[in-house]
Length: 77
Image (cartoon, rainbow, N blue to C red; front, side):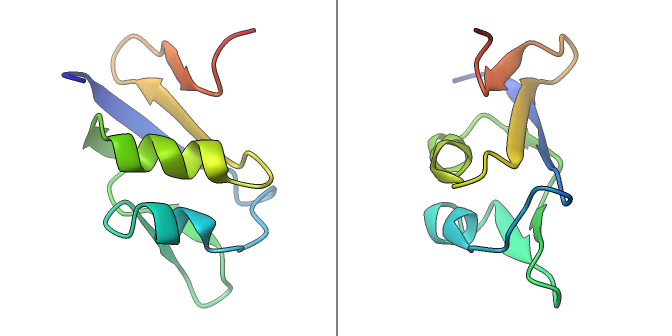
């Protein structure tokens, strides 16, 4: 995984389960309203961040390849 990613959380979808923080504590944090935020919106490709996106119960996390916009998660159908 040599790519750089753009990581986003749709706050209108996030339910604050904290699963992303459990999967990638260095990649996500919850604010006082229990809404998730990426620690760094632009980050090196990371298996833990991908696992957090895949494990989000409401699929509030999107990951794209920085520059190209190619989707990493959710994958294109």
